[in-house]
Image (tube, rainbow, N blue to C red; front, top):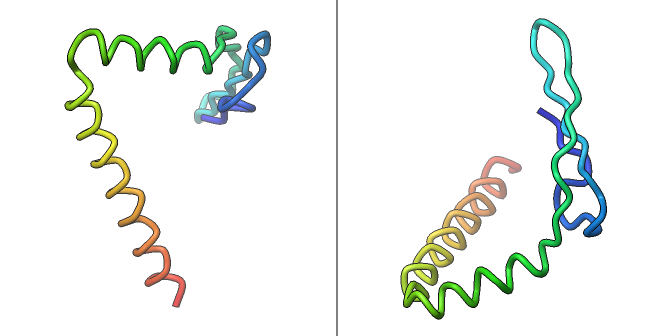
Length: 78
């Protein structure tokens, strides 16, 4: 699967997604979205729902995974 400009597209852009299989490839277009508005709405919902502590733990977990990947990449690069 290939996603063209899937991260941080402009609000009116519909990212193209290409699905390649042994039977060939198909193109799809994801719906347009405004990720800046979405993240602000998500942040607001976390605060209102009292879910901010759980979300903070999720962010810490993701940060640790990213750090582990960087560490392994450095080891494998040697």
